[in-house]
Length: 315
Image (cartoon, rainbow, N blue to C red; front, side, top):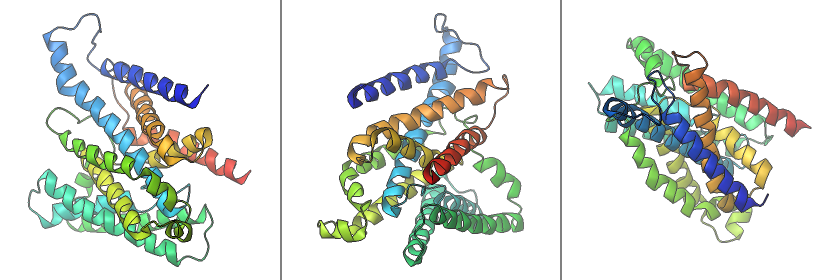
């Protein structure tokens, strides 16, 4: 199977999964019998949910590959670099500092904290003498746990623990028309990521090589961090935490198709969307009519894939 054909096949799979997603849920809707009530459910609930899944899957997968190129490490992602935890802390600080903050205010403050957290991780990365592929993401996880502990302490002191727990748990159950549209802001960010794909590819070769090839390493690296932080903030605000997605998808694509980022980006985007669609469908049917939070489903499946990748690397 040629690379072009495999990309086309994945696109068809993504379309099929998207159609299935529209007709899976508590309300029984048949594709052959859609009345006004069924159409309202599809337009108000199912379509916004589908759009959110696609944007989250694509956004977090692309964010993951950008982080891996900037960090020059296959196991670095927003989940293992403190980005997501810093974004969560930003949401909490918005709730503490601003009475009844708007969604845009939450996103701005969450973005600022996500950028700061990611830059701290990158600074630590430069200071480390040990560049082991497993050790570096462990440092990022430790940084994330420190940031998470600070967030828990602040939430406890301000009686926001329960609110934060429910608010940031990754779930698509509350996605309806009117509360997901901020995810459309990921579109220009994804366009920027695709335009800078070649430059991110050069960054992955290391600072010395990329500078030697005439690349402005710091500028491109900062642009990458801003893209990743904004996408992470948007996903955290609208959906909550979705672990491992930005870690496992780029690695799977790298195993399948190599490391040419510019050619792989469309495949990474579609695989991320398809993977999240599958996880969401599983979440909705495994204990039907109830639903498992997407954070848990992706965490279990993504965690198993992550372990496989570690063992495969060691072999």
